[in-house]
Length: 300
Length: 300
Image (cartoon, rainbow over all chains, first blue to last red; front, side, top):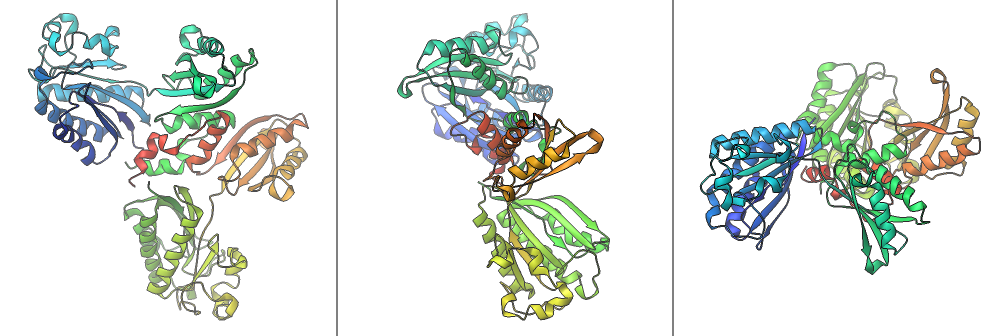
């Protein structure tokens, strides 16, 4: 079975179209990689690429793309509104199918080691791949940015996970890691009372004593004249969509409020919805291999 | 977006392993085709192949495989328990993803015309591709079988849809068509009273006044000490799994009986389960392109 991940590398080039196209080229050409999107922001001076692919293809294509970006981008002359540490600023891997978090972490580490050696690029591991708690947070690692990092990198507590404790002279450093996909799941209520949406949000989210992998806030949809419980599901394999849905319904009941619809924003792995169907149909022994399309993915 | 179908051709050779392998070979080698299964039955003297693939690959591979089978199989010496009309007995196409029934019918017709010309093989279209009501039923077309067909094919009412009104001397005739995938969906009840399962089955199935694309019977699971409502969903795009589930639950209630689990047997298209998740989560504007894995399938 093919092990499929999503990867969303961020490069520090959002203005020079010729350079952008050169960086994107390997994502178009490498077999086993499906380029989903790339968008360059001039103000941020940053390029964000979204792709999915199997483990081997992702490793190959990221080694190529990082090499191209290291060649083309000089951080000494880079200006942009978005914080950044290097030419290849951050490379997150996200399990999509048949991949455990451990395998995603392994991929992050292998890529990190490889590009550190090949391009003389210091690498930090973050999120699930982090070597210690305080390196989990990207903002924490990146603080000081390229300009301030020549000093920071020399401190023993900020020794890179791979490569030497010295910034690449033009490409800076790169942060590589693994994390679960974030599912944006919103539920609309048949009321315009924002306080009710907020009360429900507080009750169902992790920070308020609710579901472990659910963040939630109340939102006023002024144009529609209703309110919404807007959620980020941070690990759908542990906290399922149906759990959030049922818990919102359950809390809404005490206010005499009904759910009138929901939406999933952006991309998600099929398993997130299969889990929902399995729950509501009380399915036993369902296997993802029973899905015809999944059989086509086996050889990718 | 790739248009993906399932195809399950039946060949009249279940004993000669060398011939079987030659017939199966194109399904292994053709790009865009995923061979899921093939099984040869000696008593039936019949080979059943299951594959999925895109429209173009399926056309190519079936033209090749039919040519090989026409060369290798002589119906004049074929004996087997299963009724059969030709070397390539029947070729059903089933929409899986991004394919309408009209397109599946179109594929059946294009293949039929092509192989009729190329191999001088009379072709009948059946099920959704049938040119008239009485040709929908495979058994109806096949009656008389290879041995009796030299006469039947000459009757104007049994003129083939493609090719001349004369059996191929060794390969007979072939039936090609399109139909929806059949979903086998069983729901277990917390009772051992078969009469209750039968009453529920009669109430929810099409023939009893229930759901249009649902067949159902009650089954005794003696070993487990429970009974089951066993269903065939004949068009999941029109009668959804959640409709059957909810209707079984609804009918079971009047007997004080609960649903204790369900099972889906065999392969099914992902959309059948997405429909379930969409219903129960009240999802609005969900699109199959939001599923990450589906983006990988686009280029197949």
